[in-house]
Length: 315
Image 1 (cartoon, rainbow, N blue to C red):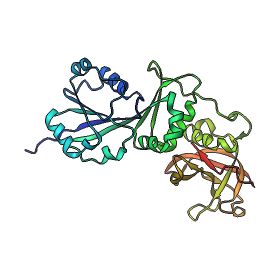
Image 2: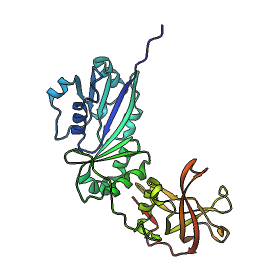
Image 3: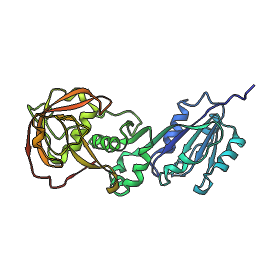
Image 4: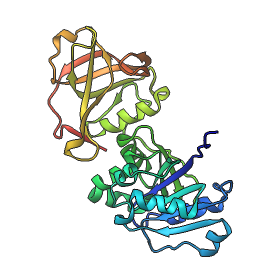
């Protein structure tokens, strides 16, 4: 009879130093999320100010080991598997290490990353994002979930959310206050969504683009006006083009064009890469380019325009 293969799920918890990873893992364990696993292995790749309580670990059948970067190897993981025979593995990862190190290192038989969560300290996020964006972005691109903790009233949570979604549109994003309770993600948009025509300023294009993507039902049948660059190619129909902007989500090498498929009767009058001001009505329809339903713009007016002072959109 063939040997039965058991799967040992790995929960990868990433984030910068003192972002709250230890507290997050401790609370998750104490809530009983892993209680069905009789033997649990906690691999700590970074020791911050907060330490794990030995009694908590013992009471919850958690064995803890601390690994340096050079120890994170296939041989070491195999050794830990043999020594502890875990049913579940929790990794408190070092936010300064490349995610590829843990992702690409060969795992013992049965070990498989089940969920990747990045923890962010909302109180220091803006400063860290401004100074460490490439490093922090890597912790987000491969994550399934981002948890912003220590959130406070008045913070630009919508901006935080857009920054994350620009890197990984499939992310689940959670905001928690200092007590660990879930916070509302309601935000004030920089334009009047109930106006006869939603006027999107040059610097707010990214906000509008992301909000339409995430809440298409709110924008359905509303009229909008914004400035964008014309994109036409042979794959579009005669009346299709995309008016959009280039966005830099992380660094200069991470620039991409974003915009929605638009219908316009006079598309032949438009030149590729031409800057225009577009006025049109937003619909929500199936498009082959999306391979699903998505926002579509029916343009009533497209007029030449000057390029914005800064042609790039930033998240």
